[in-house]
Length: 238
Image (cartoon, rainbow, N blue to C red; front, side):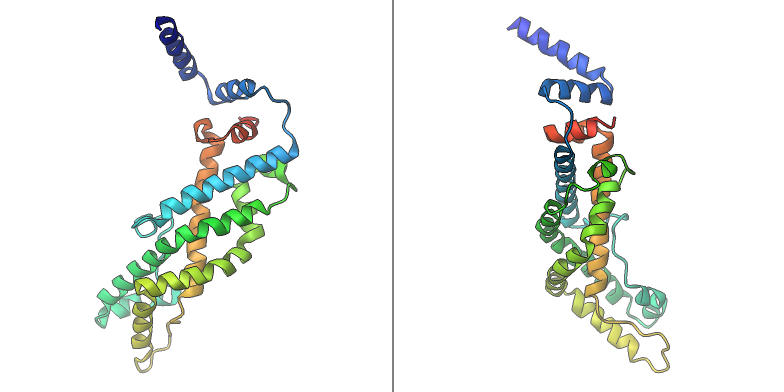
């Protein structure tokens, strides 16, 4: 028993003194596997992206996941922001705040629905350019996913966003503001009452930012690599 305990302590001390590269070499050696193949690199990248969207969607879907995260908080649409001061001057300040909160609540509610849509898109990625992605910029895998799947994601995610906006009242609150403002005589700038496309794009943009954060974390921190394949693939780059 004492020998086992002493051995465990020695192992912990040795691992604590290891660099990230050393740790990855130890883990790879323990796996007893040969050189990485292109399919393994592709699979490792997919695992990292699935982990990224899973963590990102979970983080974004909690209360205030969008609203209190300055990195991804959704502001009012640009045409409303341009006249926000006027809206507050004519007594619509509380309505503006309520709409802003509801917009972010809608994105939070829909975020968890994005997970299977993103994961399905990730699994359809081919092995083409796998090594270029691995050796690219810190967000290369995320950028590749966005470049190749964003149109499909928007199309699939839009109905979820609309349902969420309706459910939390964002559609009604924002439409009321737009209608009231647009009815003001001699108003040159009009507010588009349609929120769906805007919030869909901002929500997806926010999720990609969270995925990029997790990709960077996986690239930099061996302990963030939760599978053997991820440790092998990204360990090669340490």
